[in-house]
Picture (cartoon, rainbow, N blue to C red):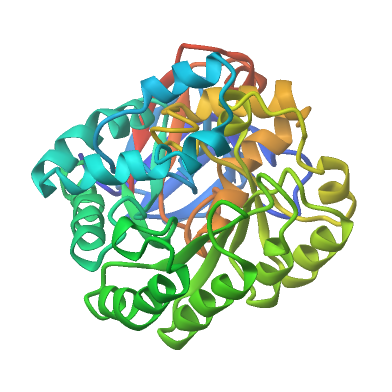
Length: 402
């Protein structure tokens, strides 16, 4: 398929900043050359010089930016259906984690799997996302918790992009839990993360950012600060699992380090939100985990809106708390559980999600100069993408123009 193309007779949801709502264009045209958008707007205003491009008739279909899942743990082995059953019987997530389950259960299964096995188990999850218009995916490590095992997980994540046509970014989440070899010595493990794991993985080009789990069942703000300082020393941006189970100071710490995003945020307060706004940090909301854990405390949506904090939505695809492989369902959950609007939901899986990955300069909107990543839909109005449950109206997915 040629990369130099025109899509005409289309309705566009450009998501371009500065335009009202979704930045819709009814009689739209989008042109691509060398994998980049060169025009997206009204057909009547299309510039000259588009001759010779392959023409695609959209027949009135909608085009949005390709969807972006900016928070996943997609590469892992095994599953935790047994823990799901325990929670149904009244055992809390925190109690399961403290008894040796939770993250460590997946660590054991992931360590036992080869890179080829990790790739094979992860591809079906990826394919489910691709079938709904995904073009960019973030994958975190954090189920290896040693240099060799983290490296294996990240290599499998990078291999996804060789097996399928999409952009994959990788995040080091070695500060996810304390592994058995460091039982009772979390500070020593953080030293290993900061002095060995992060520098080595950065040197090998396997990571684009660094994340941590700052929570009472994981790592303290002081330990997280050390991780962030190590990331900064290795020229890596940071993200953070923050304020999911309690208000532990993670959001403010993330803002202090100009984090790309702070994720979960159910227990964030106004001080946290003000700090995120001042830092330009994106709030990544994860309704799948909220639903799966049967949480009741909502993220502070009104505060986030009032302080104009960009809100992204992601699947949080992981085996323990959000085995979700549908961004469309994540949007529906964000609308029904968090009361987010259609416009907020669609921006959350495009423009804001790109910002949460530090990719706002090349993805997330339909604008000249951006990578030509598109989702073309058999819908009458964008609200259908948030309204549907269990079916995908995707007509075509375009990555880098083809």
